[in-house]
Structure formats: C-alpha cells, structure tokens
Length: 210
Image 1: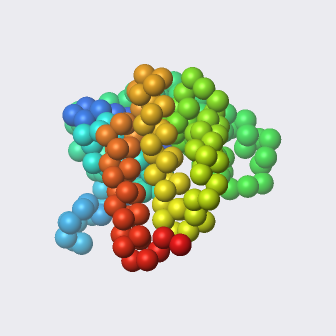
Image 2: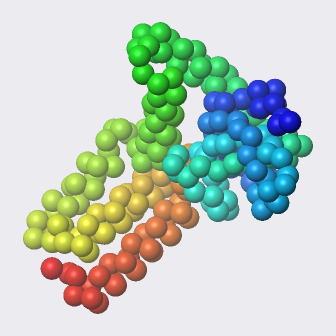
C-alpha cells in the first residue's frame, strides 16, 4: 500500500530552505513517486515536488519554475530542510481561495500558478530594480541601445548583445543599490555575461554579424 501524502511535515505552497546551502524550494505538489534509480519492485514513496525559487551563488540548482524537481519526503524531513515561509503560504492559500470563489469556473490549480508567477516576478524584479522604477532594467538597456542607432540590434549577435546588456544592467544595479539577490547574485550574472560574450564571438567568427 502506498504511503499517504497528505500527512507530511510540509505542505503544498510552503517555501522551505535547504539547511546546508540556504537555497529555497517552493513546494507545488506532494506525490507518490518511484524512488530515484530504484528497482521497479520497490513501492512508490511520497516526494516533495517543486522548484528551486532562490539559490546562493554556491548552489548549482536552476531558479526556474519550469525546472521541476522531486525529493523523498523521508529524506528532507530528517532535518535537511526547514520551513521559512509558513505565514506567506497561509496568505497565498487565503488569496487563492478568494480568487477561486470570485472566478470559480477555471481549473483550481490555475490560481496558484498565477500567484506563483506574481512571486517569481517580484523576486526577479527585486534583483533588476529594487529601490527604483520596476521597469528600470528595460529603460536603462533601451537608453544604451539608443546611443548606438547604427548597431545591428536585429542581427543574431545584436540579439545576444541585448541579452548580455540585461545581465550587465542587473549586476550594475545590484552593486549600486547594495541589494542582496533573491534569484541570481553577482557571480551568476557575471558568468552569464561571459557566456553571452562567448556566443557573440562565435556568431561573429561564423559571419553572423550582419
């Protein structure tokens, strides 16, 4: 018989923190799943399902709500994770309940997805523009682009340059505003800049600079 998934230490909507790394994991489901690399003869066990919503520079996980991961409940409940946002979870559930009552004909998970998107937008915008205009990243990169009207922005390497400018602006803003990143800190931003610079070099070598 499969273990019950509704009697766990953490609940759907909780944001928990990995004790060792400080990374934060948003739980989106609790499901019975086959243990990783286990023989098929083993019964499914409860797993926390979700995504890493915040990571320190030293943590190698992705901060992407589409990159869904799962972990055995028994493993993480042994002390490797700790609850950090139960009050927020409660507020989110209350908000979702109100919205479902107001808009009752859609799928019940759709509301929670929208709330999750609001959190993701808030966390990302914290890194791009905390203390300034919420659209500041777009305005500042657009100002740089206007300085070079003859630059081939619509070319492949121009497109990559825009992506690089977005990361450079985020790095400069965090350093200037002295903010601590919620999603990606200075080191990941600088690594992204290096990656885009490398991509631009490859495009130009292959004759894609027009």
